[in-house]
Length: 375
Image (tube, rainbow, N blue to C red; front, side, top):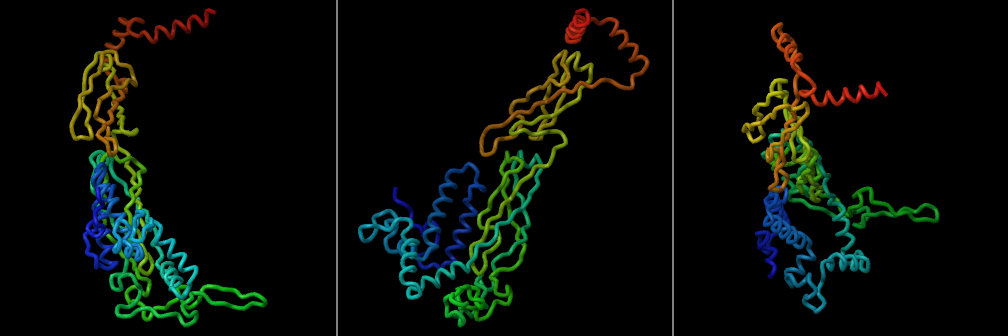
């Protein structure tokens, strides 16, 4: 099957500039990101397709090769018999820069790339309820961060102005200083090694290309998510300096303790007190579930403290799966307190009518104890 045209994949024209290219990619990446489409293989394939297209077209040399030869430029069947391969652009660029240096403008391009520093990654701590983890939800969060300046489009220069070659280093980004028999080369103090200076800084961001803002993002929380899970939102961190790529946003999810249920993976556990009479005679009661319904729990005659009743399929969903855990109800037999005179008389009568046949565990214990003392 032939690969789709990279421009069609991103929904842009062949004449689009870098800004339009980046905007189209970010919009599609947010739409088809695996974290937003859990379990959707079609969305995952689409995300890989648009990532491959953007990685090719954002690089000027790769884009030029693709415009000329199409996909053949990167699979070994290019225009002059040998093809280019995936690393052709970067490797050839490095070779030309090493050989020709300033004459090919390679060093200047390298300094420009260095100047476009990547923005920092951000961390956001998000606390949700167990109910939210059960059903899944969408949460709006406010993220304070350094965002790209809209006035100068991240360049740092005042609109209508640009950059000039640094006069101190003549565009080299470095200056030399003689110290005795040695000559030391260091970064130019005037342009900080960039090789160029800004004609006029942007008045809104003071030349940084970014400024402090607060953004509201919608985060999809998939059902079955566990405490401590990390969600990555690519490109949603701090904007890079002077048009550099943005960092990523990492959301760390914690689940609040629940008043009834304790969680262990996909299973839920609940401790429910029952009366001594119910434990002895048997019975039933209802417990709420995270589905919003109530489930019946049957208590068998002669139930002992700590016994568990399993309710299949009443636990937590497994993340990105159709499986569901179970709910285990632990029966905690409660000893009666504050007895009335009549209640005490009835229990004393019951005690007189009882023998070891109604308490087999006690009979076995005291028999072993008696043998120990007789030995």
